[in-house]
Length: 270
Image 1 (cartoon, helix red, strand yellow):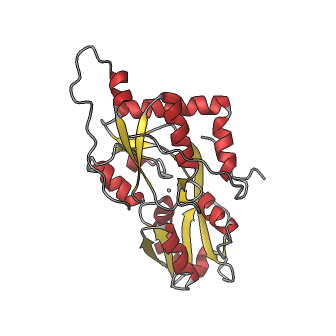
Image 2 (spheres, one colour):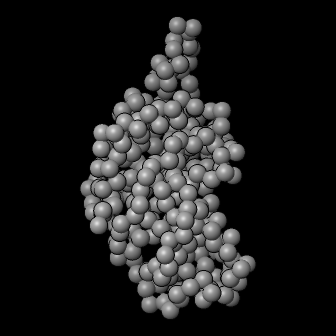
Image 3 (cartoon, rainbow, N blue to C red):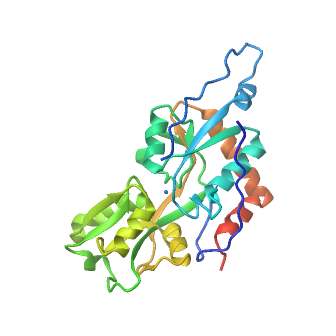
């Protein structure tokens, strides 16, 4: 099964500092059927079609464009790295929490979905080298008078399940006296704020900023909170060669300048 070609040009977003957050269930991947002692590990890996899961809506990292194609920074990077390293994959659009659950169940070989590298996750997953540095932002309706965390006391805020934004919101909820309502996808979270059901939402800063540049009537009244870097992930003890290839391909893309070209497709430098 061949890789999906993912390409789309657009300008968007504010300046961010970069160094380097469910579809149908696929059939289980099978390994090369009968390896012989003469077949090398690299040859076996090149013969495999990896099932790699991603999120549904996490623009500009993964999202569906006007033509119904899944595009974004994560997906363009994955495509370019797979070509550089010579491996094939099938992209599974599963949603963030479903991607993690499916990978843990052995349904997917890896995931790339704006996944923050945390100490807690390192206990369960193998991560690639970081490919993007992020942080958390608070979004409120454009006409809202909420200007601080103190203004959230007694209110409800929205966050996406399993994300760094959700973890941050929960970490300060008791201190500032608000309740966190969790959503499966970013779109539902934004709509809950716009409908007035939630006073604010917490989301990865570049994702929230990108949504605002696309016309969603939200604003960010506060500066970005420090966050973790994004990484490509597999389960510990599984598909370790895929992490090795991702890291090697990422380095080659950075050295060649293609990495910056991909980011600049979706994120404006000024």
